[in-house]
Length: 567
Image (spheres, rainbow, N blue to C red):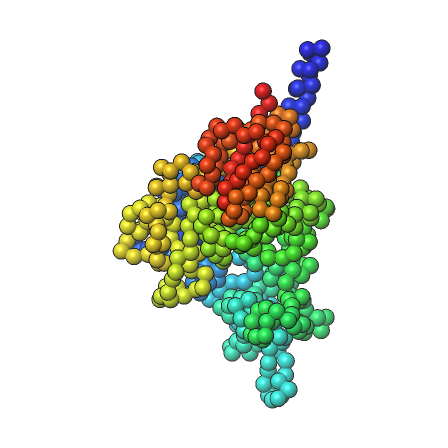
C-alpha cells in the first residue's frame, strides 16, 4: 500500500512538473519598461544613456525582473523622442554607440536579464534616407511610403486636396503635401513620421533585415509600436475612403472626431504579425537559444488582440499588451477590477491560455496620479499576483509620481510628466546624473521615494515589489496553467480576492480592500493561513495566523498575501 501512495505522489509530481515545463519564459515573466533618456545618465549631460542602463542592470536582477524593454535608442531627429527613426540600425549618439549597446547586451546575458527593443515599423522619420529616396522616386523606393496625388479641389480645379478625411493621432490631416514630389504622403502620427508602405514587398524585406540585425546582436525580442496603424484601407481604384463621424468629438481636427474603421486594425496587419512571428521562430530554430518574443502595443478590442495572438494555425505576437487595468482610477472598486480582468480572460485565457497585465507606460499618467499614491502598492500586488506576465514602467516599483514640467528647448510634450528621471537616492539629481541639470526636472519628493531609502524600509513599495517577484517563483504561482491553479473574484463591492495554488498542497490568497472604509469578509475558507506580505496600510505582521472561517476585517486600502502549506 505504501508503494502505491508513493507511486501516486510521483505521478502527481510529474503532472505538476509538466504544467511547469509547458510554460515558456515569457508567459510568466516580470517585464520592465525603461525610458532610456530617464533611467541613468553616465556622462553628466543630463540625459540617460546605454552605459547608464548597463550600470543599473544589477538593480533589475535585484528586483526580480525577467526582461526589460527599452524605448527607442536608434538614430533620430527626436521630433517624437526616438519614435521618428532616421536609421533603424544605428544608435543615436545621445545614448552612445554600438559598442555601448554590445556591452549592455553582454552584461545583461551575464545577469540573465533579457533585453527587448522597441521596434517602430509603422513609420520612419522624414529625415530617413529611405524617405528622401522615395521623394526622388529612386528605383525601388518609388512606393516605399504611402503616396497619392490627392483629389481635385471642387472649389478650384487647379488645386489638389487630401485624398481622404483621415485625421492623425496628434490632430490635423493624416496627409501632407510634398512639394518636391508633388504628391501627398500619409502619416498617421506627426508629419515628420511618414508611414511606410507594407503593401510593398521591399519594405517588408527591409524590416525583416532590421529585426535580424538586432537579433544577431543578441536581443531577446521586440515590442512592436503602434501595431493597429500599420495598414490602411485602399479602394480598388487606388482611392482612400472617408471615415465616418464618431460622435465622440465636435472638433474635426481631433483624432476622436472619426470612427477609424479604415485606418486601424486592418486584416493585413494581422497577417504581417504572423509573418514576423514566423521569422522569429525560424531564427530560433536556426540559432538555438530561448524564445525570442514579440510584444504588440495595440489599444484595440480584446477580439482583435486575440487575432494578433493567433488563429489556431498561425501565431502572432506572444504578448498583445493588455492595457485594461490602466483604465482604473481612484474610484474603481473591486468589482470594477474583476470586470476589467474578465474582459481579458473571457477571450484571451479562454481561447489561448495567455495573460499579461500592464501597469503603466511612457504615454500615460503614473499609477500614483491615476489612482492616488495610497493605491500604488495594491495595484502592484494585483498585477503581480494575477496569472501570466506583468509589465512595470520604471519607477512604479518605488511609487514615483508625475512631475510638473514646462516647455524647454529640449522638450515640450504633454507626456513629459510621466517621463521624469528615475529616483535612485536622496542626493543631488536623485542619483540620476552627476551633471548640473537634467533633461526633465527631478520630483520634489525624491528624498522620500527613491531606491536607496526604500531598500531600508520593510514595507516600502520597493520591498513589496521585490517580495512579489519572489512569490512568482513558488510552485503555486508557476502552476497557473494547471487545473485549479488560480482564481479571482470580488468578494464584495470593495474586497478583491486572488488565489494561486497547487490544490491540497500549497496555496496563496490575496485580499485587497479597494475602498476608503473598513471592510470585512467572512467564512471564505475553513483553513488557517499565515500572513507573508502586507501593504503599509495593513496592521498585520509577517507570520500572523489568520483563521478564514471567521470574519476578517480589512483596513482602508489594505492588501495582504496569505499562505497555506500542507502539513
